[in-house]
Amino acid sequence: MFMPSKFPVTVQMFPIPALGKVDQAITVANDKVRVKFQGSLWGAEIWQPSSRASASRSLLPSEQVWVIGRVGLTLLVQPYGSVPPS
Image (cartoon, rainbow, N blue to C red; front, side):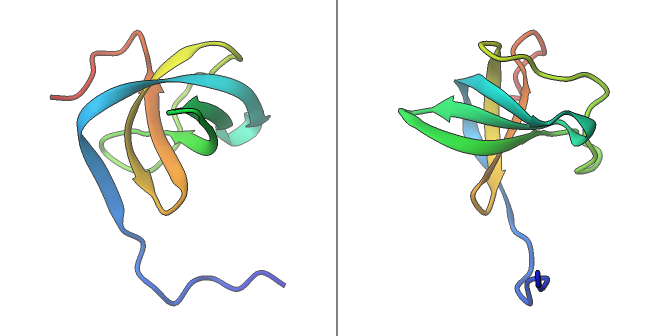
């Protein structure tokens, strides 16, 4: 049985966005994807600056994304066509 963590969730934003590439969509309903980043595969989700809610569009395999941060072992990404955060 899954137990929620007793530890606070820490969002770490990277000072400089980096490029990653979508490997596959894991759950289309909530935009969970697997991203190849720095030679490894990571779970990722689309980041919305105002909240941790998923974006309104899906990411497709082989699409490039900006990797802008992480929560635990989950990368936070934005579509490549979006302006990278400063």
